[in-house]
Amino acid sequence: MGNNCDYCITAHDSVKEMHSFLRSMGYRHTFFERVKRQGAICYFGEQGRCCTLCPDGPCRIKRRAPKGKCGIDADGLAARNLLRLVNQGGAAYTHDFKTTLKTLKAVAEGKSPFTVKDRKKMIWFAEKLELSTEGTDRQIIGRIAEYLEREFMKDINEPLDIVKKLAPESRVKKWEALGILPGGYIFESHEAGAKVMPNIDTDFMDLSLSALRLGLSAGFLANIATTIIRDIIFGSPDITKGYADIGVLDKDYVNIVVHGHVPWMGSVVARMAKEEKFQKKAKEAGAKGIKVYGSLCTGQEMLQRPEIAKYLDGQVGNWLTQEFVAATGAVDAFLMDKNCAAPGLGDLVQKVKLHTKLIPVSSVVRLRDIPVDQSVIYDPEIVEKQAEKLILLSIEAYKNRRKTYPIHIPDKKTPYIAGFGVESLLNILGGTPDPLLEAIENGAIKGVVGLVSCTTMKNGHGTFTYEFVKELLKRDILVLITGCASSLAQAEGLTNREAVEKFAGEGLKGVCKILDIPPVLNFGSCLDTGRMIHLILALSEYLGVDPSQLPVVAAAPEYYNNDAYIDGLLAVAMGINTYVNPVPPIVGGPALTRLLTRDLEDILGGRFMVEPDPVKAAQMIQEELDRKLN
Ligand code: SF4
Ligand code: SF4
Image (cartoon, rainbow, N blue to C red):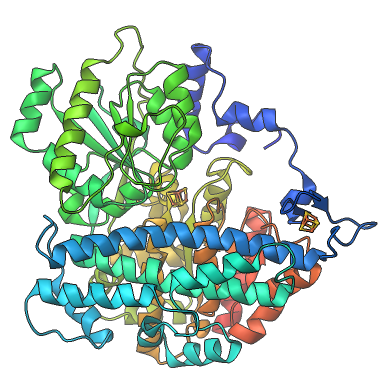
């Protein structure tokens, strides 16, 4: 991204247009400019060869200084850095789990407006966990909540029961043999947190195994269990349709953006905003009504389920789009739940003097100079009261729109199809996975890539992912997509019917046409990698094989946030080879790199793959899928 080519900076015309608009107003502080000002990236940090853990540092590992001042080598140093990143990511993901648990308990006690929407899934889950399915929905939910809370709090020497209940025996045996069958996340995280202080654990092998334990613990509790619970409460995914990109905004309405990662508050705000009394209040304020838009993974979660998607008026974009969404001047409130409220958003709103209210709805979200008393921290017991307050605050904000600010909304929006999950996919396939498996067997489809990504500034905002996905489709590889990459795919037209003709290879085209699906299937938010694992588990059970034998590769072509480490480690632990980009900060440790990118496959059936070129990466994945099939 060292040149001036706009496409190298972002794949989206809407973002380019908004960037030009901001520059025309003299604002030169977006990520376009910040990346340039940062200049070249430090080679030591990029490779994981830098340590800042004690005041004797920073130490940098180089040829003539192969050890830090304390004596740690490059492998230990890079592995320790990695474990710190993984632990942070796990804390963030399990924060979602904790919020889910709190909601579940409120549902069990009858104190929340949320109810059970997918009873069949609740019974399936309770039976899987060997819990009684006697009694009312609330009683069953109560048992599930108690079970999950116990699991979360287990000590490290008390293996998670949920792992044994949901994973195939072949996997559990491997994890047991390797000593990575984890306990609850709280104490796993505590153990890892102690290990990464200087001079405690400096063995790259043990540090790597600890990272895998965290990946499994957070993965089963946060990604897998949380996804299932959200399906139970919101309903499992089913096909929905809508529009994505900044052009979905409508300047004549009070516009509320539900932004982040956690859909609880956003779903209630979206539903209640449609109520007549609030629409009327908005009209009294001079607007035509109220519209609610999804942003980042909160939006992706909501548009997966028809029950909530019907209240959404579009998806504005992913995490790197947020400054440009605000810059339109048409957003009255951003409701920021946990994750990915970028500091650049607060900076822009303050510097451009926008009327837009930035309101944290999660206990962990803060932006500089945004007063804490402006927060409305999600509480499942009073969520409707909170949603009312948020809607009224948004209407007030609308009244404060600056008359002199030239609202600018790019005329760009693209239709999408969403709502893919195990059940909806099975429905499309006619009740069994056979049509998909046959298409793979007869070579029409070369395999499946489960893709999760944030989008980064390193290779251009979505630019790398866009090129990479197009290459996969050309090669007849079906793509399931989650996370902020889903917004990219929606805005660039990869998730609609037209994409079949435009992007798919001949074999994939034929299958998509018969099944009437796009070549890129939206599986939801980044946490919904749990849904992909659910699909992998279902397929391996159906075929009676270990997941490592399935023609599936995982990919994170623009991972950014630390929770992506959990996704990657979970996939590799499941025996799924996992492509990651940008090249992660492990490559400074040669033995660590060999372990994670080569030897791990002999031990676990899965390894990490790295390749900084999107075309070569797609080719590498095609070869990997061919190898699985032959
Ligand atoms: S912990 Fe060791 S490698 Fe890290 S800064 Fe201190 S002396 Fe240097
Ligand atoms: S995909 Fe990444 S950037 Fe997007 S909401 Fe999830 S963690 Fe944040």
